[in-house]
Figure 1 (cartoon, rainbow, N blue to C red):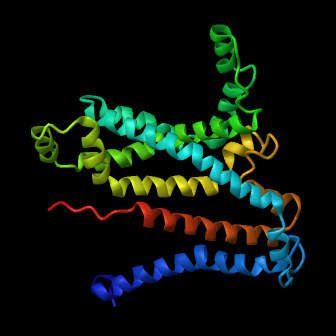
Figure 2 (cartoon, one colour):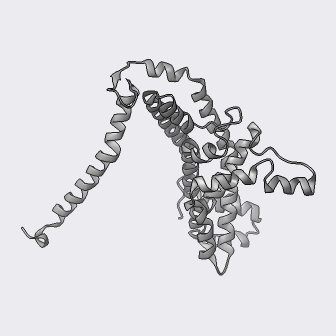
Figure 3 (spheres, rainbow, N blue to C red):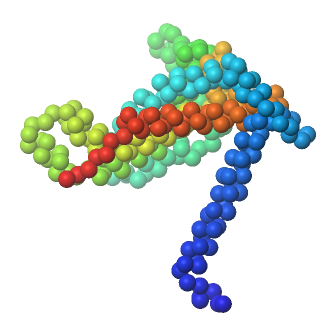
Length: 291
């Protein structure tokens, strides 16, 4: 049979089979291996042995792991309001820009594709006790801020850095929602003498609900998976205040040589993050339709 003689069903089956094969190799096999590993004792070089519930008992009693999950909540408390406010400001600004819109959007997207190690080192210098930011504050206002040495400020500093990275990406998502709102709705609201703040909360934010929920999904996913910024800027300190789950998993797997427990931690984090996302969507997601 020649290549040109394949019908659509055969071509579709071949494409579907390649997709399934890709998922089996790069998703199903690692996931099954992760589950097996979470019930095993293994040191990377020997043969894994069944450990029963020992890993579960050890992880449930690991205070460092549970503190890292609490740090995720602390990160979200800082990160979500800041990144939402900045992304909305970016989206509104982009909507009102006449020329150079694409250039400005690309400039903000550069942060998103920058090397995490590189910009973490740069921000570590900027936020250091003798860095340019504290030097400016000391010269003009007579005080400095312990950006990375205070348990409270360190998490805020990391939140600011991650916001800097994602504000352009999230802003473009919100901008797509703003651009899709029919201008006739605003015209009708102006005829009714609706105040700008009321238009924001009664028209704009409800109309971009899908984009806001998408940004929140990405933000929560980032919070549970963040690694490079705390690892490079604070190493999880001070006093474990920025010790995130990915750092604990890395430490458990490669420094303590307990990949089985690290695999179980990864599964627990996946379940918790999924539950948080489901709860957030159930509370905030609305079905908005134009009639």
